Image 1 (tube, rainbow over the protein chains, first blue to last red):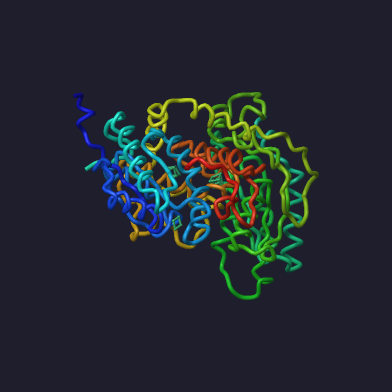
Image 2 (cartoon, rainbow over the protein chains, first blue to last red; image 1 turned 90 degrees about the horizontal axis):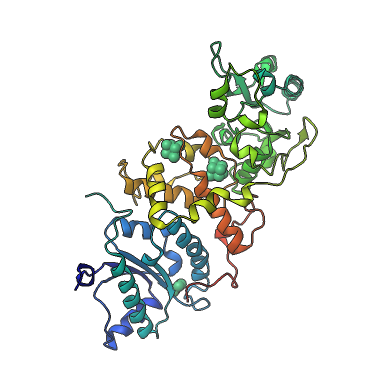
Length: 142
Length: 314
Ligand code: SF4
Ligand code: SF4
Ligand code: FES
């Protein structure tokens, strides 16, 4: 086994309370298996996720970041994720432009009934990040 | 020789005469303009902003190709309150100044009635760094070779708002900014290469905040960069903090930047932060179909959405 395969990356996931967090919950109660790499931060809505949060996560130790919200049209506050979609269409491109590997950052719509999808997304993201190795760009010097 | 390229004495006389009339008639109570900065022989000519209140002072006013500074942000520092007529300020606006002012008006930081605008169709300002290489020895230089890069790519030579024009409109050349040449060049690099480019740029930043202060799109009363809670940045200048600073600055003007180029001109370290702003302009144009990403609107692209926006996150 190479060093990278043993290494467990740290993934920070910003999940909206109403869909994606419930999806994560469902994955748990359905006893679906997914890597223990993830740390979930619950936010009221994907519209609450300031793109600066993503930079902050990378600063403080994340190797990958997931942003998850309700499917467009399903937002608990009607339109929060439509604003988030615009914001993150730009933010994903901008992070990449600054030199962050696009594989480390993902935005997905995950509903409360998509426990399986949540588990799959986390697994895939973890595997991609594992291949890249630990993130060092943007990292705080400690 | 070079001096002749920089000056327009006729325009300057017109400007002085008009400002005198406006002040004397009480249409404006002060005029924001430029005056010559004292300089020694052989030192670059330069102009600094000045405020004229007394009609007999108009002879101080100059207007030439070294009047870089945009004056519109000074409007935010003028005393407020009282009868708006009394505090009506006059100022000159070129194309980029008028876009910047439009930005402040859309953001309700300045009201249109508070200002009297002398429009000057502009054919470009001189880049001091380019000028310093040829001044004063070179007998002949072309104007083109010393013009500011922003001006070379400008597509808004004529002011978009004004009360009167001081000279004839000029023809608008197609903008070269829309090609986003530098942005595309950076996009073609690998992530690691791009990171190195930005690391080299940002590590020179001394966090003087000049780029923020000068920016007409950075017009919040309370700036997040100065907030301790939440403290997005501290006084550290570690590279990680530099990325955060530049991420915040650029993202906060995404969709709001008018492309005036002031931030690039003012930076004492010559950091090319304009390529960050232009990246957003390019993406906004491509993703949300905004044809002129520089033109201020009342609702900016990030302040609204379209249910049919591109979907990449399924
Ligand atoms: S970001 Fe720079 S170019 Fe854009 S409006 Fe502000 S100062 Fe002008
Ligand atoms: S003007 Fe230049 S040095 Fe000053 S804070 Fe902005 S980028 Fe940094
Ligand atoms: S509540 Fe889930 S995205 Fe708005």
